[in-house]
Image 1: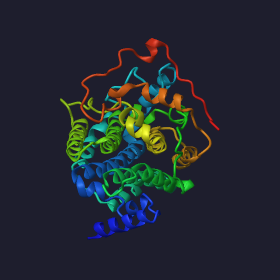
Image 2 (image 1 turned 45 degrees about the vertical axis):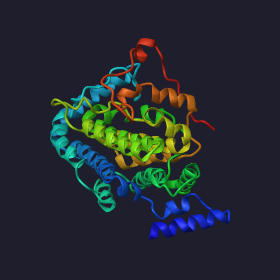
Image 3 (image 1 turned 180 degrees about the vertical axis):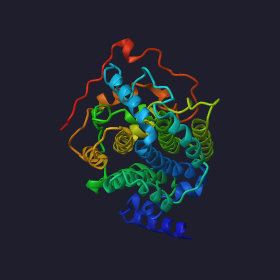
Image 4 (image 1 turned 45 degrees about the horizontal axis):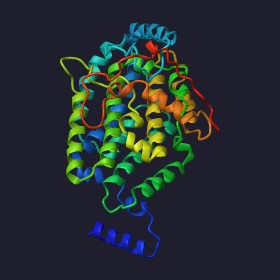
Length: 377
């Protein structure tokens, strides 16, 4: 009855020329995916708890007296990586093995984190999981929460058959997201240097390859779901796409022959995994990618063994990601950066799977170097 009443309100507003595409959506935000595809909604909710748990496990590992050897190995690996010509997050060269310097801690934590994928979590439980990690400052928590809610809005808009002007609704949702300057990241491409050249870069990926890969599998799920939801031409194709993407996600998270090599080894990005979403809604796509990059940077700061004040370091990076006119890059530089590693390393296409990388030559082989342009005014 409520849905029918809201539809009548929207129709009446349209006749008088006042229809706002987000009015109906605002009253149903967060519920469409759960109502129509509860299994997938549970996977996405669980992925947020997974992310929070990964952060907590990293912080606990750094505090453990048993981590001294792992810290030493991590320092040595980061020094070697800093000297390499291919030391960028998105690269087709030298992807790291799944056995990191803290492999014992990862091996103990991984089974429990994998089991989370099958659990059901409410919004309140997600909040509690995020707040449980005292290493993350309140503003960073607020930015991650607002980003999560924005991604949920995008899905709801495309799943809501009563919203006819999808593009207008997305634009409205983006404007609303950006209305809180303190808790929103930029809707423009951030410089790759924020990811690749900050003081503690690569500590997350190098120190915890399994845990970082699991968070990237969850990021892949979010992007693939957005792409399928937006591009489905019928209810049947939508249902088939959703079922397929859920199966692929489980395959990535589950152990394959005793290893974790099915996990992404690179950060999934909109132009690679959800190219149509990026093409139609670039501002929204940049927000999602910037949030993902910020999560990696937070992971770097938590994972690095030599951060004097983790809270202050995170706050500093949050300030750079939320700056709307600084630390920006040109679109072509951004595309070059995110497309560098190829589709396979970022988890494969939203529909279908890939058994091997489509990349035949590395950046090292082609002597192709990344040039960053920031800030962009």
